[in-house]
Every structure is written in C-alpha cells, then in structure tokens.
Length: 142
Length: 315
Image (cartoon, rainbow over all chains, first blue to last red; front, side, top):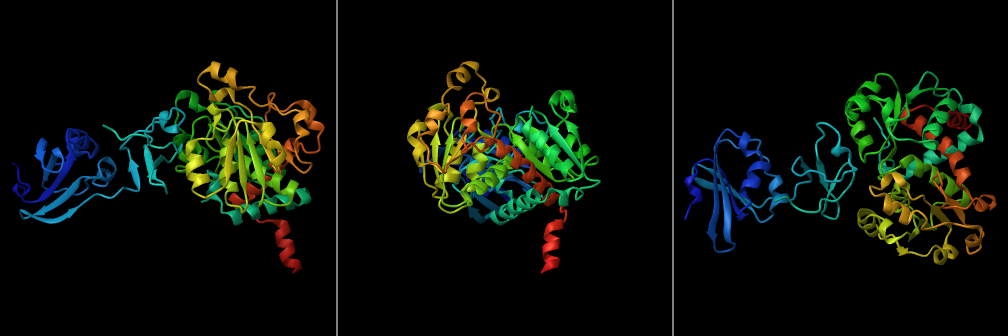
C-alpha cells in the first residue's frame, strides 16, 4: 500500500475514479508543471474497490485544481507541508471551465473561430452551458 | 461600454425607457434627424438579410449618421479566413458602433469582447435576435397598450427561431405572461429555454400541435418561418416547411383584439388574404423596427434626446 506522507511538500489527489487519472493529468496541464508527478493506477480501496491517485511533489502554484470539481466531485485533495497533511478538501464546482471541454455544437462560433477559448459557465440550475451558444454540456469527458 | 448581445443585457426598466424613446422618435422624427451627425454605423452582415440590415441603415441615416459595412461573408475578409475578433478590432477604428449578423451562434458576443465600440447582435444563427425582440415588444405594447397579462402563442419553428428565443427571454420579466407553444415535435423549443427560462421563472406555458385549438385563447399570435438555412438535411426541411399556415378562415377562430406578428420574411406560413385583416401587425412591426433601432443607437452611443431635454426645460 502506498502512503501519502511519502511526499514532503506538494499535493495528493486521491479517490480518483480508477482509470481516469491520465485524463486528469492532461486536463490539469500537469505536463507543463516543473515538478515530480506520480500517477498510481488501480490502487485497492475499501470505499471504491479500485481508485487512482496522483502525487505532485514541489511547487504547485498555478495548478488548475478547480477543474477537478467538474471532472470528479468525489476526489479529495490533500495539501502536504513538511511531510504532513495541512489541508484536505473536496473540490467545489467551478463557476467556469476554460478549455477543459470543447463545445460540440457545429453552429457555435467556437467551431470556426481561431484561438477561441471554449468556455462553459455554471448556470443557476447547476448545469454548464457554453457562453457563446448556450448549449448544455451533456457528458463528462473520459 | 454597453453592447446589446443578449435580450437580457438591458434591464426591464432600460427596455421600457428605450421603447418610450422609440415612441418619442416616431411622434416627431424631425427632432432627431441630426442627433447622430458625424457618427458612423458599421453593418457587419455575414449572412443575407433585408429587413434587419436595411432598418439599421435607415435608422442611422434617419439620425443624420453614416453607414458602412458589408452584406455577405463573401465580400468581407471572412472569406480569407479572418476571425471575428480581428475583424471587429479593425472596424473599431473605422466606425462608432457596429451591428453584426453572423450564422454562427455567439459570434457577436465574441466580437464584443474585442471591440472598442458598442456591438449590437443583429442575429446569431438560431440563437438570439435582441433587436427584433425590441421591435416585437414595441409592437405588442402599441397594439395592446401593455406588456403584462398577455397570452402569447408562438407558432412554427421554435427550435431554430432565434426571434422566439429572444422574445421569450424578455417577456418572462413581465407579470402575467403565459405562452402557448405551437410547433411540430421536431421543432419544439430547445430544452435550455424550457428549463432555464420558462420553468426557472415559473412562467406558465403549454405545448401543443394545434394552431386552431390555441387561436381562441390568444392575445398575440407570433408566427415564424421554418428556416431552410438552419437545416443540415433538406428532407427534414421539406417535411416540416408547411406545418402551419395561417389562413383567413383560421383567423375566424381568433379574438377580435388579437394581433398577428411575424419577424418576416414570410414564405407561405401566412396567406396573403390575412394581410387585409386589421389584426395583421407584421408590416407595422417592420416599421417599428426602424424607430426602435434609432432609439437603440442613441442609447448605446449615449446621444442626448432632444425631446427629453425639452421636457426637462419646460418643467
């Protein structure tokens, strides 16, 4: 069994749905981060059966953690300082998603405009809508 | 800087005051013929339009301003692949205000984010058409004397009918509005309007396939055209285009006070025989469009109202 206190300073993203950690890695832009990243897949879990974990060692400033609330609300984020958990939280639903998912409406301006961000905002009824065409986000990416 | 992209960009009070200004302009057009002197309107029409583009141009000319622009994507740099963002940044150096029509939904919003001048959404795909809504509201108010306590039938293409979407959004802010949605199953109102606008604001509505059944209960009948340009599949268009045709005979079922509106152009959804019926308000609606766009241009450019000033002085 792997322990989260193996990290001295950084973040542990735990309780990720098994098999989806690589997708999170891409969407969070972890490849651009100049620090150590460990992806642990299919770890045994009492609660979930199987789960994935991502450990990030080092300076995590600028990390897009808000995306996690949309991608997987069951995730927990533990902040580690000097080998100890200083904060543990569940991500909240972000008010807006920028370039996390693409609008798939062929009538939307995002389908033809160069370098146009794909932006979805949380509506009053808890659904995400494209700010340009208002199409509802139907499915979460996998 | 203010833009008009979504019908709800203006508060209810701002809409009412804009309609009041349109009324004042219509009552005394000569008083307004110089208020936009030396100002330029750019009409950026990436999609064909007769009424909207010409009424914008007429509105600016009536105010003493000038007009420049293009009337199809082929005659603009869009044909070379220029983005909406770049186009509006350039146009902002040439004009004081822009009206944009675009086949893609959200294009005017995109433009407004890069513009140095006010941008007006003159119709974006099947999404919104807020200046048509102002025109519709002015026509309804003139015909009925109010914007509250009305039963409004919306008939035809409610799925791609951007004028319908914008009108519903705006009218939900008024008390006592009830909608009867008349359309074939395939052209029903999109779920985002049903859920986020009608249900979210507890606005009573019913959906029906029967125009005849709805007619006796209506204060306003808003007819729409089934738009060939919104279909990816010609067969679907052909199957649905004749779903509803308003005839003089069907008008016998409607109350004497009902008004028939249509954003135009019509194809065959209103028979020519209905034009002579005093309840037909669609040509009057097209005329109102010029006054309401004059009021909108004045408002977005912050131009003083000569008549309002006079009233204040008199007080």
